[in-house]
Length: 413
Image (tube, rainbow, N blue to C red; front, side, top):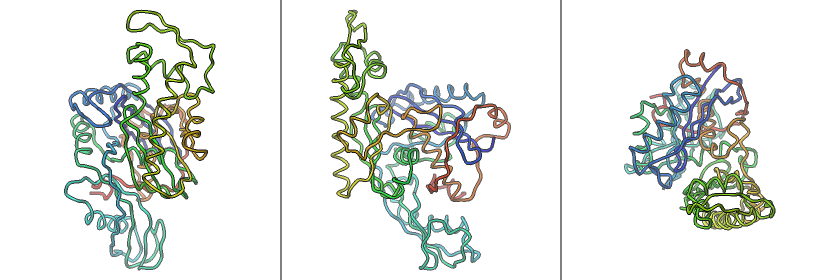
């Protein structure tokens, strides 16, 4: 076992924790859990005590799977009111040959000049480097030069987005070694050549919110959050059939489809409603309810994409737990166009799209380490020996992603 990384995504409905090993440049899932959430509304922590209890329970679940304690993690912070800004920074090359230290110094110069007092630096995504005001390249390590200029997209959020998450994790004895946003994690989870070269969007349909993020050549440029998500479908079904919320959610996930084309008029599902009466529900009928709400969500998302940019969109990727419903891609293409696809996680054990943020942020972190030329693991040697018996289900991480990190950790401070 070489290097092990853990990541957490704190959602309004569930808390997802993923633990992976990087083995010969491929990811191996060791453990994953999706535990009930509490104290979180529309992606923001509203009750720290309840949230802390729920997050602690999620860590206990994954630690029981692993047999070791998880005390370091990559944390996803809320994307609410995120801002994206292209920054430039310059540094003198120390030893006439460019090193990771010189690159870090150039980034630090650009970041320190551009972070305002009322916002918190989250991460940055490198764009390119210029050597001696002439040569431009993606990774200048090892090249001769006297002066290095770096360009990057810096991501900031309101301070409370970071501090509420960091405060709870630290109170549980969990060290945050990296922070990111869901939009960066989602993109890295599904990154390919289309994403690298085009303008596109990622739509994450969460429980209470839907996040629409715009990218240009894999660089995030804007994010919009709308207050509607999968839980609205549960509410519709609960109202229509007089069900409690848990039964409505189960009806959606186990029986309904996303599009009437995939519904069977002869299939029925029997439930006991809140009045104690047994009711048989036809699959076509329940699908019409689900489809109606999904059409609303996707139409809102389409309108937001049009507001975010007037440039042609080469791709749209849809993720989040709701995108796992049968027939979802067919409906998404009807509303958003044929360039739309549902994200497909290739790592065995976390095929459900609700894990895309947590898994993608691990990929984000690994590629940051590659850029710095550093080795790092979140688990001790003794813990690694305990974990070494895990089955290996691989996912390649051999792309050239270059992303950022928590300010102090990234720059080795």
